Structure formats: structure tokens, C-alpha cells
Image (tube, rainbow over all chains, first blue to last red; front, side, top):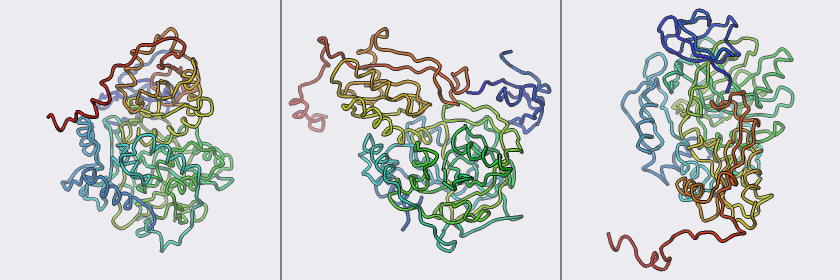
Amino acid sequence: MARIFWVVCPQCTKKFYAAKDDFRNKERPLLCPFCGKRFIDREAKEIIDDQN
Amino acid sequence: MAKDLRTFLRDLERQMPEDVVRIKKEISPKFEITAIQQHLENEDRYPLLIFENVKNLKGERSPFKVMTNVFASRQKCTVAMDLPKEKWRMETSMEFARRCNHPIKPVIVSKKEAPVKEVIKTGPSLDLRELPVLTHHEMDGNPYLVDAIVAADPETGVHNSSHHRMLVRGKDELGLWMSPRHLWNYCQRAAEKGKALPIAHVLGHHPGFYLATEALVGMETDEYDVIGGVLNEPLRLVPSEAYGDQLLVPADAEIVVEGEVMLDTRDSEGPFGEFTGYYGPQRWGPVVKVKAITHRKDAYYMNILVGHPDTSILGGIPKEAGIYEEVKKSVPGVKAVHFPISGCCRFHAYVSIEKRVDGEGKVAAIASLPYHDELKHVIVVDSDVDPFNEKEVLWAVATRVQAGDDVDIVRRVRGGALDPSSYIHAVGDKMLIDATRPISRPYSERIRIPQEVMDRIKLKDWL
């Protein structure tokens, strides 16, 4: 599977994951599947990544 | 009468009336329908479900009934192949393969003859939110269309049918994610010419349509011919509303959503609960602009529950006979191939053979591997073990395998794009297990009650 990173939504604080190649440091808006908030990765409340 | 979802429902009710359940109580398409499916699955029950009072995405009562679990047991697919329900094992897979090998050209009918054109919505009247589109799992977040997408090759006009997830983003916009297979190739070539690719999502048709969609055929093959072969009659097609003859759509579908893939316009899509039982991650996928929705007046909205037997079995049956034919070339004694639900009907194959010489078990395992890249683990058993009975297969592994001799691992081979355990995208390891008895040395005998006594002592006479 594509490599993933977890993000915590800055609005509802729920966690979901996205493809690293598509969103990490790309300035592309993520879409929170729980509350619909759009945000780029550096705006996330928390990012859980493998650092690679 | 042409085969469609309704003729299948009649066939199913004739053979397995207890396997069709109608629910009249009002229900939301967001998690509530899939919750009922999950409760039933927890009890190992998989009836075809028809929800007659479902809300649409605007919260209004939908005129569409929702049908789901169409593929959730092999017996239903057996009925779809016009076989008696008792022939649900290898007979169903072999009949599917036989039909795939006898393609039938489609016929084109007029709009008047096409039930799917009874209601046509284009322009401002078009609104995806009027459909009772299901949201399956908690992290999906959004409703998804999940049946089958048809498209025409931008150069040859050959039609392809394939399964892809499509997020409903608004009244006329969808999000799409596709693995790099045929549809993806069509999109790339259309984009090279600066064009968007017209596609149609076919929501509800005879199950044979969707089983044929899972057939592994070359890109030069017109899949409408293969679908005709599997239906055992010509598929009736009609020009699409938005693209005319450039994109032909099934005339006997329940609902068709037409649109075009804009590769240069992308947005976030996903996560989505995939066939693996895990969520596929959020992706940056192309936007699909919807141009027309056509449907029958009293259409069923068919949904395939991804990540559960409904989608596993749909994908498994078409691959079983294909592997059987591949193995037969080198191991003539191959008896049956089963893709079990425990392997999502993609990752595990159980192959049974009438072994003649030592080493043949490994040949059967090796021959199985190239057929489909998602296949990870092959277990080969003797013909006294039923590959459709997982308990027997694992008993054979327990009692006929020494890992040092009988297990082989092939590292870093092309694999499934959605396998969550692979750490390189679409690359993974394969494991071959030869669980057959050796020929060249004496081996312990399997216990059994004398057959004569088994035949004479009947349970009904004693209990």
C-alpha cells in the first residue's frame, strides 16, 4: 500500500490517514472525513509519521 | 426478456426464497444499512437485502430501493450462473470461465427500448444527492458509489468495465481513485490528447455483469463481449446521454451516472474501507464532473459492501478457474482452486491436486502465482482435502508440512496496491506451502470410520 501518515484534525481532533506521496509537505488540502474541515498537513493538530 | 437485476432476483427467489429479505422500516444510508449487514455477518448470515424506505443524501425519503449483499454468498453467484444452488463450489468458477471463453457481441438498442432511459436528468435538474448513496465505514466520512465504471478506450473505442471507488462530493461532482490498470491507462491517454475521459457508473445490473467485470482480460478485449459471454446472451447497450455513441452504456441497468474524469483537476478523496478490511488512505485523486443521471422509474440502487464477503466473493470466483487452467498446464491432476474469504478472496489460494510425483505440490504453487498480482499465499493440498473447507486445509498444513522443506518464500515480487503489510508500494513477498503428503516414503494414514458403517448408520435413525 502507499505509505501513509496519520493526522489529527485541528477542528474535531479525530484521527485519519492519508498517502504520504500525495499530501506530506505538498500544500494540498486534506479533508477531514469526520467533520469536513480542510487543512494542509502542517496545520494538523498532530502528525504521526515514520520520518522516512 | 434480457437478463438484469430483476430477472436475477426472480431466479434467486425461486431457488432460495429464504435468502431474500425485504425491510420496510425507514433507514439512513449513512452507516445504518451497513450496520445491519455487519450484525448479520457476525451471525454468519448473508441474505440479499432490499431496503424499501431509505433516505437520500438530502435527508428526504428516496424513491429508490436499496439492494445489497447480492454477492455475499457463493450460492447467489451460482444462481447468477444459471446453475442449481448446490453447485456452488468449483462448478460455479468453471462455468464462469467457460462463459468468459465464449464472448458474445453486444447489441445496440434505441433509447425507447432502454429501461435505464425512463428518467433522464441533465443540467440543473441533475443532483447526485437524490440517490440513497451509502456511507459504509466510520472513517469513509463520505458516501461512495462502488458498483462498476465503464469507459471506452480513447483510441480504439473498446469498452472496459472495472470496479473503483467514487466519492460523492456534491450535486454534480465525484472523486475517483484508481489503481494503474486499464481505466487509469485510458485516462492517461485521453489526457495526453488534452481531453477528459467520459465514463459511466453502472449502478445495478445482473450479477453476471459485475462478475465479468472482475475477469482478467487483456486491454484489447472488449469487456462488453465478455459480459455478454458471462450473461450467456448479448448485453443490450444504448448510447449515453452526454456522449452518444462515444460511450455506450447498459440499457438494462437500474441507474447510470455519466461524467468525465478531469485528470488536471484534483482534490482529496478517501479514506475508504477497502476489500482488505482496512481503510485505503486519503488520496489526491481526479475530479469527475457528472453530466447526466439516467434511471428506471422504480430503480433499485445496488450497493456492494466493500471489505466484506459481498466484495470478496465477487472478486474471488472469477480468479479461481483462471488459476485452475494455469495449474492444469503443468499439473494435470489439479482438482480445485479456492480463494477463501479469510484471504479477502484475493491474497490466499487453496489448490487441491491428485499428486503423482514428489515436487508436484510446489509446481502447482509456483504455477498459481503469476495469474494475479494480489495473490500472496498459495497452499497446495492433496485431493482428500477439500479446499473449500478451511478447517481441512489448515489441518493439512498442521499435519503434512515441515516448514524447512515445504515452505518457500519469494521476496519482493509485484503485489497488491492495497496490501497494508507491504512496505514498498505494490511490492511484496509470496509464500508457497506444499501441504501434500510425500509419495516416495511411507506416510501415516488418515483416520476414518469404515465407509460401510457410515452408509448403514444414519443419524435420523438414532437422534
